[in-house]
Amino acid sequence: MQAIQLTGPCAASELKPVTVPTPEPKPGYDLVQVKAFGVNESEVTSRKGESDADFQYPRILGIEGVGVVADISADSPFKINQKVAMMMGGLGRAIDGTYAEYCLVPHAAMIPITTDLNWDIVGALPEMLQTSYGSLHEGLDLQAGDTLLVRGGSSTVGLMSIALGKMLGATVLATTRNPNKVAKMQEIGADHVLIDDGKIAAKVHTIVPAGVAKALELVGTTTVFDTFSAVAAGGRVCITGGLGGGWEIEHFSPFMIPTGKLLTSYAGEAKDLPAKIFDQVLAEAASKELTVPIAKVYHGLDQAGAAQANLESGHFLGKHVVVLH
Image 1 (cartoon, helix red, strand yellow):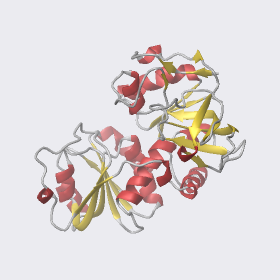
Image 2: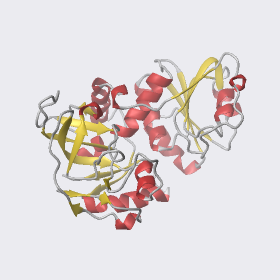
Image 3: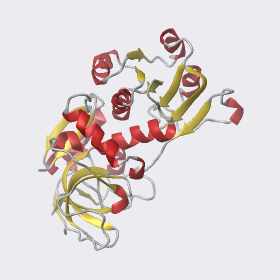
Image 4: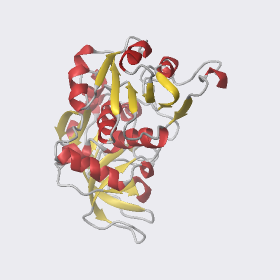
């Protein structure tokens, strides 16, 4: 089969398909024919040789994808020709990933899906939908009628969280540092878009005087205390990202958390995304009730390098998706 297999750090332009053996099913793993995959920052990091120790060369990149089950193990809960999404479970890091015509996938990293949508739309969803839903459901316990602040709303997870928050019945406020991204965020579903200059709490209170009920913090520790100021008494903040470059709070004390407000985080797996939710999102996308944030679609494995280069450029809004079939 053809795959993007790294043997060491390289430039995006050096991501070229090579011929490698097609893997075979084994206990706990099925063989999936990859139809499309999304491109992620973590794969750029791996390509540059900057990943954690769980990533070793040689490795086929790709932490997510969608496709059709091609062959199954004796213990498989799936069926041949079944459509599935795949994500996490060590894909593209500890084990070979989805930048390939076929991928050997752990059962725990597979979600059955039912859809007739084009593969480009389906392929954009797995990782950002899993992260968004896990953050909103597991992290924030988002309920219909809640007010939700998405800080870092123009990121792929931010855009997905705006759309998903609306689907789940919330009123959504979202932030961006770039005024040129406001219209797209409103198109995705944001009720209010705020320009983030590092201090947005006062702006939030002009819209929701008591403060929002829930806040998804994607910028990270550099802004989390300002985000706390935008949250109502009894409200909750979930840190899922570090777009601002901060992952730690220096000299942290529990007493830095405002009295009566809750702080949590999210970093989960495929099991946090129920198949029924994935199918609901696919159905809403098919009916145009939900817009999947896609930056650009590429065709063929040989376009993986271009997709990574465009992702790195920061000039695009939404997900970069490579379609193979």
